[in-house]
Amino acid sequence: MSVINVHDKSFVPYLSEETILGKIRELAAALSNDYAGKRPLFIAVLNGSFMFASDLFKELHIDAEICFIKLASYKGTKSTGHVITAIGLDTDITDRHIVILEDIIDTGKTMSEFLPQLRNQHPASLKTAVLLHKPDATAYEVPVDYCCFSIPNKFVVGYGLDYDGLGRNIREIYQLKED
Image 1 (tube, rainbow, N blue to C red):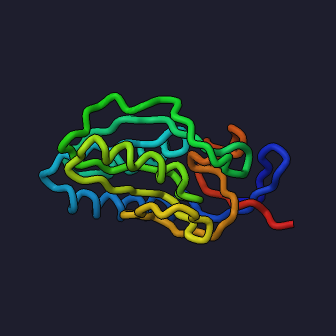
Image 2 (spheres, rainbow, N blue to C red):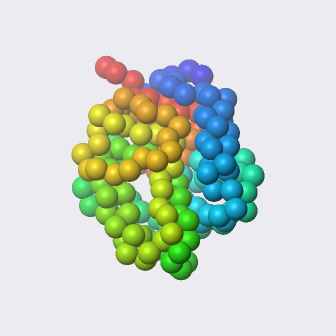
């Protein structure tokens, strides 16, 4: 892993693919244990969570379903403060065990608006599983029930996370280079 450029910014290595996949296997084992016999529905938040959701789902050892929604609140390297629903949930979640799969909890704005919408549909349980959490950036109180990595409040790309559309296909996670 070496320094990479995405658009006009430079990024340095942060988490290797091997490290990421190891944590995902640990998370899958915990979820498989906690949801044994419950047939949970995993709701993956696009676009960023697609790699995380795919790798996690392959490691689960339980009967489970997955669906996808698209929420967005980022433009460039900053949150816009507005959550946009581009693709909505079209599955009945009443009395279902729901696990939201999110690539990153940053300010928490997206989940702070989305979770109440889900609670209003009366799921049996509602949990979040995130690849990355930035506790120092979190401005909205949202539950982080399962987390692979807590990271500093620095912009990251790779493994599904982008900078203005680019960088999602990078197998590792890179952090914005300090000037």
